[in-house]
Image (cartoon, rainbow, N blue to C red; front, top):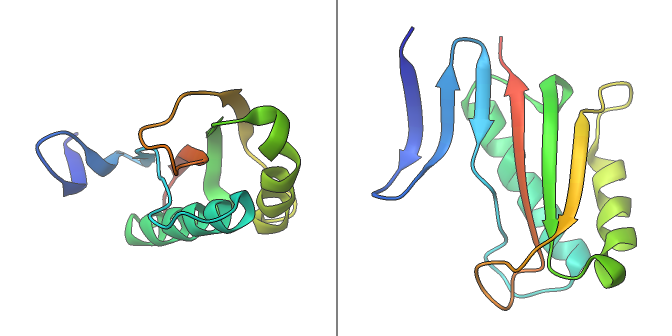
Length: 116
């Protein structure tokens, strides 16, 4: 089986497809806004990459969510996340606090899904 990589640069690929599996890189917002808006922007990016990969949020297997400040942002992020999920198709999930790449980034999300 071969690996297909989408939107690659010298450091990473936005998605890697192997067989029926889709692995997305951590997606971050590009606009400095509040946690709700940042979370929605990231989820919109995930939707687009999953669609391009032949999958969607109903096919999620797992998600890892990185928050800059879990005490401050967990509840609001979780509200947006819960509204986005397809009912009955919730993935496994881990949420941790982490130092993120840029000071304005409050959330980063990576997912694994099935396609087809």
